[in-house]
Length: 313
Image 1 (tube, helix red, strand yellow):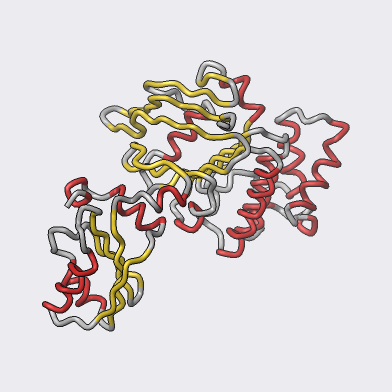
Image 2: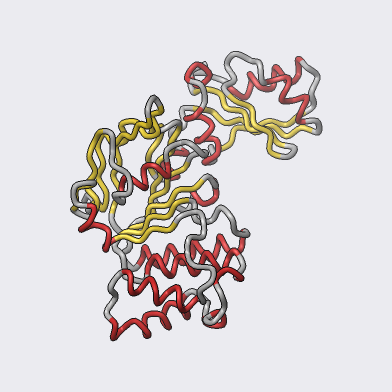
């Protein structure tokens, strides 16, 4: 049974002069799921999010978000979405509680329930002790929790997060994702952009964007099983020499060093990738151990964003 969609976009495009920031994007985001946008800076993630919430008008294409066509019905959509940017955009000279109370007024949250809602969010996002603290004096993790609390104060059906963990420590990132999973389990649809591989692996589904084009789409497991590449892991005492021995082979699409290990991507069309690697290491007298391994999400990202000629080498 097909899950109901929170977002359906077809041919969504945004051009800034000659720059195609987003180019003919098709998107299906199931309700009550965490859907990720993975890509480097400039890949079109933020532009797409801004079009989906009505802040930018598409050059071409259409999107249906929670049953509303955008941008035609953006005004009706906005009360149903929460939006959190990568930069802290609340008021540093107001206390934590004052920020929440101000957001409650903006969304016309029922006055009779505002105080209890603020108390609930302070408790849920571990901000009770910071209630009277000025937001500008908080740590990065605390500011992030406050921004999320403000984004969900009005019980949005859709939460749009634009690289929300780019300026916080690893523990704060883990805590933040625990909160996202709780929201999704409660029925909130979450669209989150990131350039962190470990975060992308946590999403139920994700799209990989490259120069405004969607180059892959699916669950992390689906993407990892359909790279079109063999992945050979090479363990060498001198990984630089091993990389030098392999990087210029015509049938090798990519060589990435991770510590003392190399991840070598070779197209599926090559019958015996392990023999290819071992023969060239021996030819260059590089002692190493090699084995075929499963693709990681980083391998997927490298495979789908590389030059097409290398991908089909």
